[in-house]
Structure formats: structure tokens, C-alpha cells
Amino acid sequence: MDQNEITSRDRALFEAGIKLGALYHQFMGMPVSIETVDRLESAIEKSVSLQPWVDLVKVRIDREKLRANENQFKYCELSGEMLDVEVVVTYDHVEVHARIRYDEEMRYPLMRIEKVSTV
Amino acid sequence: MDQNEITSRDRALFEAGIKLGALYHQFMGMPVSIETVDRLESAIEKSVSLQPWVDLVKVRIDREKLRANENQFKYCELSGEMLDVEVVVTYDHVEVHARIRYDEEMRYPLMRIEKVSTV
Amino acid sequence: MDQNEITSRDRALFEAGIKLGALYHQFMGMPVSIETVDRLESAIEKSVSLQPWVDLVKVRIDREKLRANENQFKYCELSGEMLDVEVVVTYDHVEVHARIRYDEEMRYPLMRIEKVSTV
Amino acid sequence: MDQNEITSRDRALFEAGIKLGALYHQFMGMPVSIETVDRLESAIEKSVSLQPWVDLVKVRIDREKLRANENQFKYCELSGEMLDVEVVVTYDHVEVHARIRYDEEMRYPLMRIEKVSTV
Image (cartoon, rainbow over all chains, first blue to last red; front, side):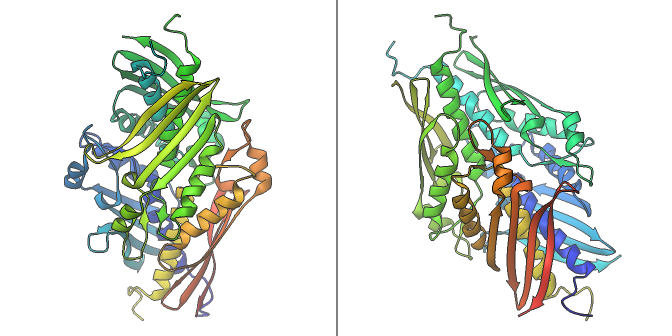
């Protein structure tokens, strides 16, 4: 294979990155509370699922961190440290599992490729 | 009254403005489709309702404009022209009804005070 | 005066609120470093100044908090606790000075009316 | 090579996707005018350049479309159709050139891999 040729695998990984980068910046800062967190997780999942090549989105917002960040009005803004998101993207038989999870040591919402496989 | 004194009415109007400005910029650009639009309206309402002094939020996304803006993947990004939002803010007995609605002539998502009253 | 009538003062306060709410949610999450912070302050000021009735915008991003929040790649995301913004809005001879500043005790980016006057 | 192994090339493409997805959702909706467009292009470039593995960012905002979208206050919100962005990401000797450009037919801000090479 000519290494300069763009493959389906390349494209699947590129698309997985797009989805994570987009959702992170789209949803950060949203007001969220213990009462609304279930609904927000579900709204993010449905919204991201609309985009091309997305097979599955699973969003978990950390309830403990949410409580720890509550302001005096009993809500907080959604931030990277509360977020755990898995996205599965399939492009032309290549399936990519990718994830955002906050890395406490790096102080960074790390986006990782967890698995690439042919389906 | 000293006109430089800040009144409850001033504060109620200021708070109503904050809520509209914030929600507009928070939610613009979200992926939305005919299938997810109900859920998105509800998620925006719940999220905005968390904020201090908010009594009521009613969000309507124009289904016709949504369809007209659909891309080939059958969704679009939420934009100002699709949005009709009413917010009621009450601060210390002053109730403000405010609204965002797209003004076709001005090409502008106009934010208006619809009513101010003492409750 | 009929208290249900909407005055220029009402409108000026409402507009000031809109500007603060909008800018907060528009600019939160931007990547920023010690090297780019001057430019980002200026870009926010220019962008907010475009909006109707805005006379002046002054943005200060706290360099100490920026450093304290730096990740291992030597930048951080702009967040409410770093931000100090003053906006002056004038609507039909009523001038409103408003401000966003993080309140450490409330854990909240407080938006306040600082002064209302007739000009 | 085990096809399930994650390579530097995979990672470079994933990172390029992240940068495009993030910047798109971060900067959409910003107020922009003919007077501020140079500064905004530069602010986006500097901000995106802070992120890991980014070698180069070139942002062009279409002045004609900007004018065509101006509201009565002589500015508009930055939207996908005005944007042309090139990003070069290098991860462990793999260089990816990626781009966002609006596709008029698809009505979609298409994100594409333009070139992958070893450096």
C-alpha cells in the first residue's frame, strides 16, 4: 500500500476524533444538577448519535464531582473533570472505540482510542 | 427615588437579559433532527430552569425551518432562526416576561421584554 | 408612570444582561496560555463591542489563576474563575455599567449591575 | 502488523479530527464584522495552536459571505459556511493535513483529510 493513500481506517479514526472534539466543546458549560443529570446525559447521547458514522454514544457524568462543584444555587456547569464519554464510530467496516475521560494527573480531559477493529 | 439607586425592577430585567444571552450562545450549533427535537427542547428548558430567579422557560424549535435546513445526514445545527424561547424571571416581586424570536427583516434573533409586572 | 410600561432604563438593563450572559457562554472553554492571553482579551473585547448598544468592554483574565490551571501542555481552558469583565451599555441616554467577576465564596461567576445613570 | 494495534498514524488522524471538531464548535456563533475579521482569524489560529501536536493552523473567513450575512447592526455570527480552516498535526513522525470547508451541495461543513505523510 502506498502510505500516502488515505484508507478507511484513517477515515474512521479521523471521524472518531471529530466527534469527541465537537461534543466536548459543544456541551461544556451547560447548567446541570443532580435532578437534571439523567436527562442531560440522554440529550447529549441523542444529539451526538445524529452525526454521520456514529453507532453508539454512552455519556456518564460523575455525580460526586457534580455535587462537589455545586454552587449555592444547587447546580454547576458541566466541566471536563465530570465527563466520561464513549463513542463508537464505524466507517466502511472499520470500527473505532474512543473515549474522553479526565486524567487527574495531567489535569486534562484525555481523548483516547480504545480499540480499532474490522467488522 | 434616587435614579442612581439600583432597584428590584432593574435587577429583574438584568437577570432576564442574562438568561437569554446565555442560553442563546450555549445551545446554538447543537445537532438536532425531527426525531430529537422534542427531547432537545425539554433539555434546554430543564437546564435553563436551574438558574437563579427563573420561574418558567418555554422553548419551541420551528420544525419547518429545521426540515429546510437539514443536511444530507438528516439533521441540522440549531440556529437562531429556528428558535422561539420565552423566559419568566422573578426577582423580589418583579416578574419579567422576555423572549427570543428571530426577526426575518432584521435577520436577527431579537431578544425582547414582553411584560414587566409586580407580583 | 404606568409601572407596566417598558422604559429606556428597563431596556438598557436588559441589554446589559444579554451581553454578559452571551459573552460568558461564548468564550468559556477557549484554550488560553500566558503567551496568548493578551490577544484573547483583545479578541473578546472587539467581538463583544460589535453588538448593539455596547459602548465599552474591558476584559481581564487573571494570569495567576491561568498559571494555576495550566495543564501539562502549558495552557488551560478559559473558565469563570479567571474572568473579570466590565461592559458599558447605553440605550437611549441610560448608561449601565455591569460586570462579571468570580465570587470565591459563592463559587459563582457573579454578574452585577455596578452603576445606572442618565447621560 | 496486528491490525488491532494502535499506530502513530492512527493517533495522528484521531488528533487531527479532535482539533477540527473542537474548533468548529468552539468558535461558531462569535460576533464578527469586516472590521474585526482579521483579528478573529488570528485569535482562532493562536488558540488552536496551543493544543498538543498542532504544527500549523490557517483560518480564512469568507468576506463575501460575511457581508451577505450581516445584520442591520453590521455584523454577523460566524457560521460554518464562512469558514475555511487548514490544520497540520504531527504525531510521532506522521503528519496529517486536514481541512474544514463548507460543501455547498451537501450543506455541510465538511471535514476532510487532505494528506498523510511520514516526516
